[in-house]
Length: 139
Image (cartoon, rainbow, N blue to C red):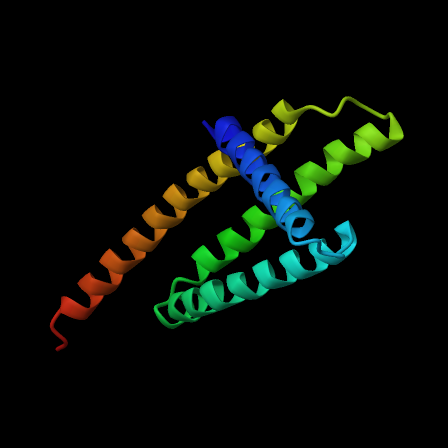
């Protein structure tokens, strides 16, 4: 499933890139490929800031900082796994395989799920202990 999602994302990005290039050509634009990347990625980055910043503010105010951490680390894992595979391709130190990227991301998701379950159980037990301590009448 993750593999298909990543392939769809790559296909979508390629489609958007082609459409923007065609628009530039249709309107006899003089933007180079680098200038288009500058504008498109700059605009995309700002749109993401306008979407993500309010979400992160809300999550931090509602004590959901772990979700912010997960999103950040997941993003880093994506960058790191793609970088490793691209590096292997450029240096010839290994095979650049999409399956390695999917496997690495899957490993992070799986291990994080285990961590989240253990963390949830510990938090739940601590809350039960606190409730019992608070419900005991004081002499």
